[in-house]
Length: 423
Ligand code: EPZ
Image 1 (cartoon, rainbow, N blue to C red):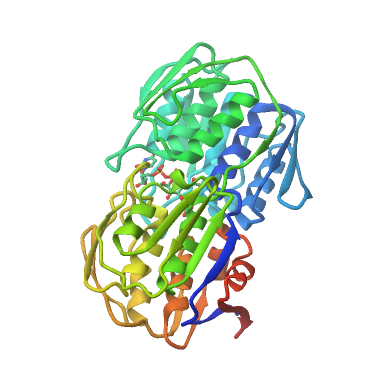
Image 2: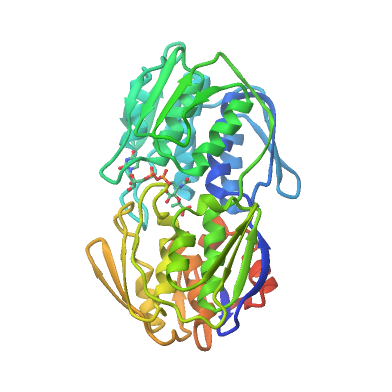
């Protein structure tokens, strides 16, 4: 089995470049189904999730290839198959996001239901609501969603949202499907995440007419067709935040560039509250925790511009060594504290009460053999290992490879002692 071995105690110093955003490129690649001809995507992170989505697009008849480092070419000469295989959807839940674009472009879409996952239940009711609002006939048989439309989807007004707030995936689905619908689509309570802004910038470059993105009301004037374009994907704010937390927990000084600092929303101010120095300049952000004592703080995850749920595991890990008690409330997913059991094995003092983790800072974590149960848990366990006394061996690297590009090389360039080993 392959493990990640991290030897803790070395303050991280230096600068890394953020990779392209995983969640942004996945949404954009799904939207390429709508665009005729050739699309070239730049700043694409080389991740297993990206390769899985390329396989799905190939299954529908598109041609996908890496043509240079971090550059993908996708040729769309027409969709030849509107059914996605269960094996691929099971590999990556985000593959359900081809539902809207496939339906809008080919009039039909059959996608197996992705099911729950380790961070929570993850229903798709709002995706289906959006497709129905646009006129699709949606049914469920044999564990798959089947959506069909005679002719074109029809623009409509819709309210999307769950008890957790706005939904990123359903907002993306409604935007992509609405882009080729006839007439006007209005999405109320739209999610405002920067990855949605990136998707819309791509679609508008391809010929779509979408306004209001970044606010909670998005208006789409449907067009007849979209054309492939060249587009560079935004930097990954979750990857960036993970490296910043790693810099802080090791009491180092780390700069992340190729990232729009405002996309990190609440993270910089929380790190400032904890006692770190923060500098933001152009497309880079520096956090300085050299010789600083870390104060506790409280965190509530929420849809953007709230604190990102995807950064909660790294942030909570940081708080395990702060000087006092912190509260972390998770409001987006209902089971995103699973990784804290592994932190407890490393000496952290964490109690879970419903949707809140009570984190009592300890002097130091100690290395242990731990298992990553999802992508962001993997990032958090690296952050923990970098600060722990001794060696931490992390299992579950298939999750890490889904969302972090070249993590070993990047952490090493900051001075970390980290390597992949067989055990
Ligand atoms: C996206 O997931 C991201 N994934 C997630 O990142 C991220 O955690 C999440 O947005 C929130 O920011 C991708 O972009 C590929 P949602 P998504 O729809 O779209 C509930 C990572 O680690 N809900 O905003 O699936 C849902 O269960 C991943 O990179 C419904 O109830 O998230 C959740 O509790 C993990 N019904 C909440 O809404 C629906 O139809 C927010 O989900 C849809 C969602």
